[in-house]
Image 1 (tube, rainbow, N blue to C red):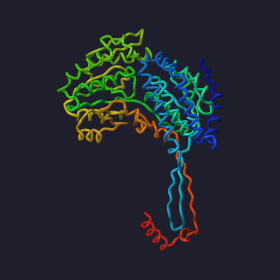
Image 2 (cartoon, helix red, strand yellow):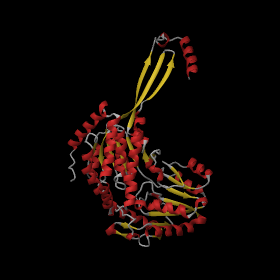
Image 3 (spheres, rainbow, N blue to C red):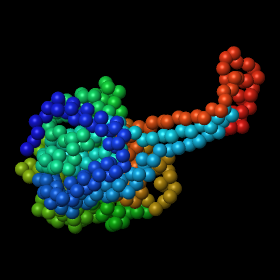
Image 4 (cartoon, rainbow, N blue to C red):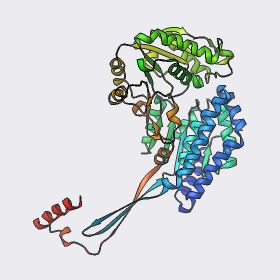
Length: 466
């Protein structure tokens, strides 16, 4: 049963979380590990229910749901549990001065009570992924799942209290009005995943309280292929990554750029690859999901008028189905050319020179990721030096997000801050310095009235020390 949203209860939860995060005995390694192990139990004990909820919300195929949601989180948990003790160790440095021995110790401290606002496209992974980082860092968290994934949201609200006390994790369900009420409150840190438009509002609300934020947003991720990698294997990976989760993935390739000489070849092979994956009638495929809701389907439908449908384009509103769609002849300046698609529509654009693509993206908001397929090392360097992005992935699509060694995040319109693995721990902590200095004596020259001799001595000593 959905809990009624009560701000006064939430204020009590905030106080509990802040008190716990600031009590030394309550935030030690063992208790953090206990919390992380409870999340692991939450996932493993109810695996079938999670998969059923994901099926209900997005009609996710079981393998996709397990791999991209449950397995992803279990991997993140195991990496965090393995390395947390090392991450928590203070960084200690010493320095010897004429006036004494200096010691600094920098510790990673929790912020306190953290608000986490999660989206609907990966409703379990993108809810509990940030929670793992927040709890590992010693914070308490209040989680607002997306109302557009109601089955997962209900299950989170039901199961979380069975595994974690509210001073660690508290789930709040509700619509956009509830989200606004939450963001208007004063938090110690806010973590948001979603669109740049809503992210800007979250940022503005947090700024009123000078609250630090992390924003995981999106963008038009280009995928550039050169003549050295124009083959069936490349196209297979592109089609798989684009239509995984029906294209509702922030790091999906948004637009494909193909050398003009190979353009027709790419179109024909991409079409065949869709058939190989999903058959001639994808609506009947058990391996192809659905659009989250009818409003998003309507938003996607408008893109179809901005070019020519080469393959696909079928829609069934009753089942929220949109076929895997390849598009050509994209109109310059159209919504399809300028906006993030976030669905199963793939524009394919020929190019004559790599500089044509680079010039386009040098004047656009920074994408979350650039995909580049090439065997030419100089091409990698050329693109890396001329285009900005949260990540540059060479000859692979989307798998960079699965590495706990890879900070995930964007810049500008594609995001602010990053997480995953140690990056999550750093995001949900602030650095606190303990400074100590043993002074056997004071130097009289450091106090007024100052002398020219003291200044000369200071200059000489500075050169010796540094």
